[in-house]
Image (tube, rainbow, N blue to C red):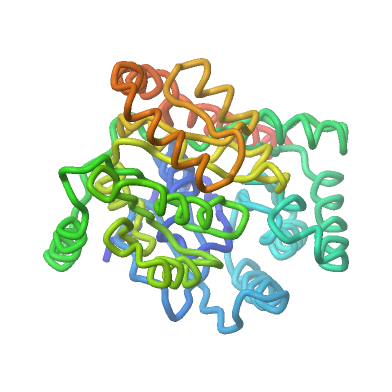
Length: 396
């Protein structure tokens, strides 16, 4: 266990997020960057029965035990526990990640008269299923209005979400894209982790074109069901699909693979720590990012996995969402599907692998993405924000 002995003059930033911390790479990168910039950092998230143990990090972490499943009461329980945790801490600055932590975080910051920064990872009111729950959406809409009316320092993940919030609230957020590190540290794996990875590696064929889809939060709007069915139209001797993640429909995907006798064509890997994910990503020959535009959050976001594929040297096949289409076309690193019919997805995959010259060009071009679009560059925006907050709090 690390001993966190900081100089007393270093400002303490308390970072709040509703995830269990293991797979949330964006939050980890922000915390690490703030730590490296001279701040003390405490990251608070959740711990569930299924949560794995966290490895030591350079900053402090705390996980709140939450007993209720992912319903409206889950958010209520978490915010109540979070509020009392925050009230008992001495903080100089608060950072809330996404709307679901803001009730407790804003209230604690107001009581303590401390500045608060908001990181909007997504367009929360446009997430999957929100339009089918009008009462829940009205509650979150009320909270969102409070956030945007009270806070000065805010940033989000894409130009499209920035423009959306500017139209609604007449406020301009900064944009901090969720980019991978250009030079990630080699993970320190335990013997048990190495054994587990080796066992999974043995399930993945090395003599086939490996397709990869990864997401910690797979739901029905990600296009994964159609991707699974597309494997019915692909030759088992040529193609294999690797799906990594978890989420609302993970068990449904497992059942689909069994019911359609696709076990020889598809390998499923439950969500893994972000330190391990890159190992599997680098095995792929084509990355899939085929979210549906019918969900506004997907339409306007800039998905993490797009950059994770490209940093690993893996070209992509994507749906035509404005943010990722802009990146793919600019750097010439992939192609697109026009709709989500399984036969069409399969046909596009076949076409890509039959044009080896284009595929090779896409792969070469991923190097430029890694050089230009990386967290080492993007993190400077985050650090500048908190330096400004620190400066204003001192002057105030």
